[in-house]
Image (tube, rainbow, N blue to C red; front, side, top):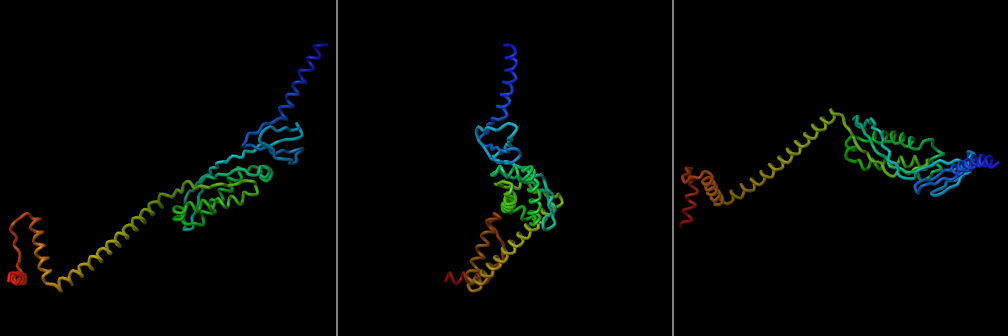
Length: 253
């Protein structure tokens, strides 16, 4: 009789353990459980210890931590008809577990597909220069569109970052030639402005020398001094202007 009682208790204990294992769940701080009773949504529970009715209630775990989604490389044609390859990364999290489970079958895949189409759509409206120079503005535009469209899924898109904008090798060479031409143009403009300023200064100097002949003679002597120092010689043959002799004679008198 004792053997029969013992043989009856073992299955009973085993069934109790299975019952407890299927009814008691422990959720971490960042987890929530969407509870379904006989297939109908009833509640969102967690974190901590929760108790389910076996075979009557079921739960679906959701993670509230930020998910980092890598958007695959997309072929984009800019508004100025330049073909580029662009990839990005999206940071999002669940704010409404009920909507994330009920409203969409797979919220991660749905967000990924939506991010790809939005990336192509937004960047296709801009020129290549804007993609390269206004990346922060484009990030904000894509983030706002994604956040608005995923709101019904209980998802909050926190940030979008465009990682790489890869240009065809032919286009890279064309951009390099354009940049070189722009540098040459700026150099010519700066050189022309310098020549214009130098000509204006020379004109002013000529006017001063014309009004004051003595200044011309002093400039002549200064030039001779510079030539003597540069050539390291004590003998210089040069034409002696008569005006300089008359000026020196006047100074002597």
